Image 1: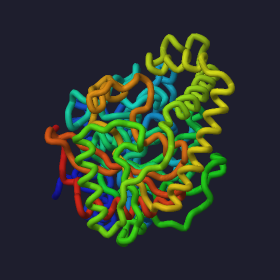
Image 2 (image 1 turned 180 degrees about the vertical axis):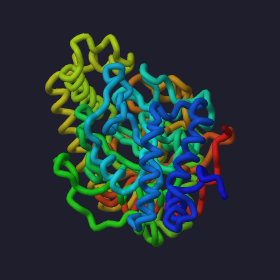
Image 3 (image 1 turned 120 degrees about the vertical axis):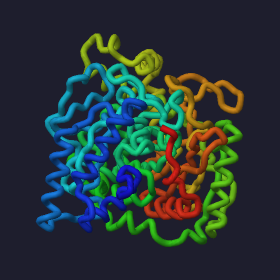
Length: 468
């Protein structure tokens, strides 16, 4: 039998449905792989071994009774440690929540359990997801499986490293400024940030609640689409969740992309890009041209969004920290997160309200841009994976990057809320993956998925594995 840990989620689902394998056999293979591989990269911070096997055996029984339903039934999933799991420690990467065991599942976890997807455990993150690295004072650092001296990105770096290393076919992360797309780019997997509100976010992430998107991470586009089919849909506990859609996201992967109007921007007009990244992304853009898309170089006329994003996030996060944590909370805080406090003290009310207005103006400009184009292509990051312990590259194209400010091309689309994905575009000469960002119109995950699937067919990546 093929190595179960190298099969896609949908392939596993088909084998389970045809009774060639049992969910418990898949889970045992995943747990064995975790035992061998996780000590090298620290992607999982908590493995729920006993309950994972119990849920898998329950799925075995449901298949015998003829109760299995859905293409991912019995296929295991990991959950980022920022997302609540009933009875399973959820630390948010923080010493303040080191012993926290939620009494309720997040909405998306409820849906996974109902769909018969056993939960493997929790993947590592940065504290409260507040940096583009995956390390914290509770569990330490996650390493990039392609090069153990480099970062997997963040803050869903545990999830993307887990999928890249074959410790489970599917993962759920979240993205408040690039936290799915950045590590997906660094780790060479597919990560989708759906439309804001497509997947309900409850319990709320109060520091992030105007920015965060829950989303799937997988080795293949169709796996991510099938996972989105399970996770999407309204829930009254999240007032921002979208009304029920008739879309079938897995089916949306079918069909050609001929005639789509596609904009390509190598730098969004506000950031330099490493020549290796630009070269790989330019080759990827040609695949869209060869697929019949009408591609032209263009970019939205928006300013660098760093101050808008920073002022919104810092003000929300610091107020939440001060309300929820003990008076001396700063003593146990990640040093980078602690920097938010003096930044907040330097902000005026006008600065904060101005950032909210500027974000609305940015959304208006993006609406005008996407009235002309179906998709926008950009690099995810201006560099490949950066050094371990850093929250981003120190230099881009030979120039120093200012500390604390965003350095990626993902942030505008958390401010606008529209769907965007990171797709593996290629590899550098020294074997590091590079991600291409595919941005769609508001509410149009279907076109993003269809374009992603056509690119994957033309330039597949799933059979390339890190040298662990």
